[in-house]
Length: 177
View: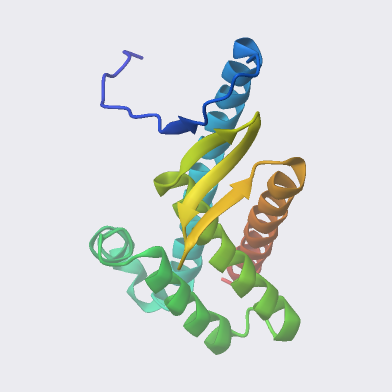
């Protein structure tokens, strides 16, 4: 595959310090963070794809002969945001009783956080203060979240929780079809 040349801007801020800096460690850490950033954005897209499949096999089931048209003109359109798909998903959840009670509440919390983290990494910047790395982003207010193991575990739990619940619902729907 031929490499592509597209604009790229890596936004990283560093505070000035007189302390020695381990450039190799910082470079390796930045590379790991960038790989995780890509996984977070890709993970959000994967979750969104499962939501689309659930919508196509529930709400839009009657128009299955025009599945591609519905996907391209509605679900993949710029005006059908992740938030809009979440609202449609809630209709499908209620109408087809895909989740109830705590399961539904937990999924909704996970989906809310998936978009929060996706937006934070897509639009935020990585900053370093005295050797500690933070994700700086805006979510109703300016936030600086330390990029420690606890934070990465929260993200992993959130994404895997949403993905697992949605793929189980998708499998259940497909098994009934």
